View 1 (cartoon, protein in one colour):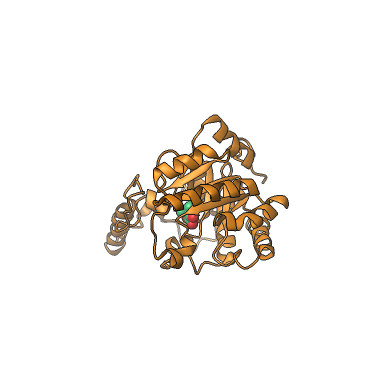
View 2 (spheres, rainbow, N blue to C red; view 1 turned 120 degrees about the vertical axis):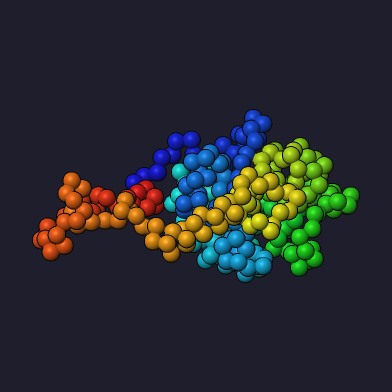
Length: 306
Ligand code: KIV
């Protein structure tokens, strides 16, 4: 079934939002059911971030994520999305070795993953790659400031641009990426004064994470927003729920009910008898109503949509 293209968020519509002063909302997503929930809640951009290394794979950092991993998760997110713009994140070493390799791999995220644009980390040094991708029709979102793929160079996850020369370099990076054709920039872990200055001096939208309120949009990792890890509470995250605790409570109730024989109850159980008959129909009966069974079990969202 063809997807509805009504109100689809596109690269031109994101640029228009910046011009109109309309704030852009972005979140990470890694699977179809979450993408569907976020899309229906009105999110503008879904990023299949390499943060999936930590969130989905339980790794310590993003460095081990492969292009195949991002393609796999991007496909799932695209299946769950109607309206939001879907961005595939270029993982570490999928674009650093050469411009040619970078363009090829960006193309795979679009062609195989179904992403509508790609994101990559780095400032002016990525200008040639951004320009080549843009020329062949691959829109690029840049990412400067705290760039997690450079964790070993930065010596940890540290706010970037506090010193005057670092702040100046960030502004130059933003201008170089815009000049190369990037359609938006993620600003991560940057003092708010610096991200305000960058947002004011470029025409493409800035999307901040730990970069203060003056960016043109905001992004968070979805599991942080939902409070799924009670032990992870960095300053830049606002928790909108305590889902970690609530999931724990729901599952411990399930464990108790299964052990106590409370679940499944009569209403969760199928019977050979039709609804109007008594559930205690003769098990030896030849009656075989597969049609009714098929109608009783709803399809999963992904199956329903396609
Ligand atoms: O990988 C990711 O989730 C990101 C966002 C935090 C911007 O790059």
